[in-house]
Length: 474
Image (cartoon, rainbow, N blue to C red; front, side):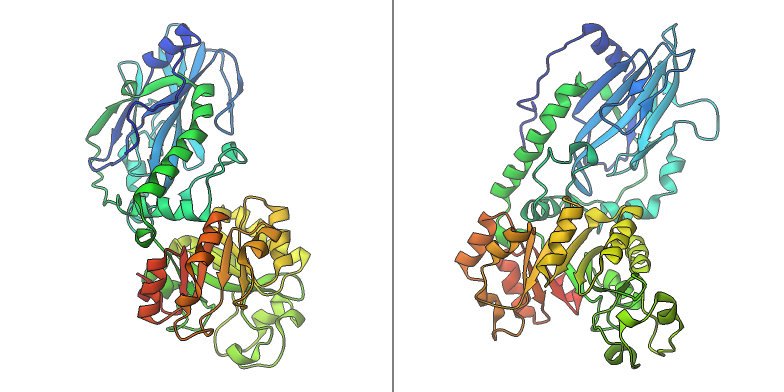
C-alpha cells in the first residue's frame, strides 16, 4: 500500500567501511512458506569496543578474540500482532574476519544462536537463522519455533492485530500514534492478513535485499513511518468496516458466574478479545475480582469485601466458588490470550500499587484498559503510568464526554446507556461521535445483548462493545 521506495528515509552512508562490513556479514533468514511480511530496512551499528546498544536494552561485550561486532536492527512494517516490528541480530567477528558467534532477539530478550551444540548456524561466513511465523523472533533451528507452535498459531489467527500500534520503551514519548482509533485500524488491517503457518521454512531471504542505513537514520525515520501507515489506514478503512473490540462483560456472565474463572474461560471460547472484570480491595489491600461491595448477592453470605483479609476470603465457605485475586485473573487471561478491561470499583493507594506491580510482572500493561466511574481513580492511574490506557464511565446522557475525558487524560469514553432508551444507539448522535473523534478519544459501549443494537453500534464505528454474550459480537 505505501510506497516501496520508503520515502523520507535518509539513506546517506556516513562510514563506507561500516556499511561494507554490515553488508558482508548480513544474515540469510528462512521464513515460513506462508509468511506475509519480510524485512525492508536494516539499521546497523558496528562495535569495535564494548558498549551499550542504542536500539536494544543490552550491552555488547567484545571478548578478547573479537575484533568487532555488528548489530543489525531489522525493521518490518508489520508484525502479525501489531504495527511495526524491530528484531535484532548480533554478529561477532575475529581478527581474521571470521564469524565466530551469533546472538539474536527473542520476544523481548535475546539468545545465543546455538541449538544444543557449540557450533552456530552460518553459511558463507554469514548467519543463517530461522524466523518465527508472523512474529519474527529468531532461532538457530526450526525446533525452537515448533515448541511454540500453539502460541504462534493463536498469534497468526484469532489474535492477529490485537495489539494495535506498538510502542516499546525505546519509543515511549516519541511515537504518539497509539490512539484508540488507530489501534482499531491496525487491528482491522492485520485481521484481514491472518494466516495459518505451514512451519515449512522454505522461504529464503537474503538480508542484503533490504535497505541498509546507520541505526540513527532508521531511528529518526520510524515515527514518521508509523504515522504514514496510520494515515493510510484512516483513508482506506471506513468507520463501518473497522474491527470492534469484543469485551465480555464480567466474563461470559450469561453462561457462568460473573467475574469467575469459568466466565473468563467461556469468554475466550466464544471469541472475546477482552474481559471486563470488576476490581475491589480487601482489608489487607489485595486487589480482587468482584462487582459488589457486599458478598451477599453473588456468594450468598453476609459481609463486605473491604472488611475481610485475603486469607479470610479464601476461608469463606461460599458454596458458589471462590473470589479470584487480581493476580489469578491476570495469569488466567494471559494464558487465554484475553485483554483486560478493568472496572475499578474501590481501590486504596497500596492496592493500586499492587495492581500495577502485577501487570508489570506479567508484562500485561499494554493489554489492559483501566475503567471507572471515579475520575480520581483514573487520574491516579495516569499519574503513575502515563502509558496506561484509561476509560471514563458515565450514566448521564447530557454530560460532555470530551471535557470529562480530557480533565483526567482518559483515552476512552464509556457511556453506560443500555437502559436510557429503547434504541440506545440513537443517543450516539453524529455530532457527539464527531466531537469524540476530533478529540482522538475511543468509544466503548455498554453491555448489549440485542443483535439489532449491536449491528447498529458497529455501523457507527465505535471501538468496543461489551456483552454478557460475547459470541453476539463476533
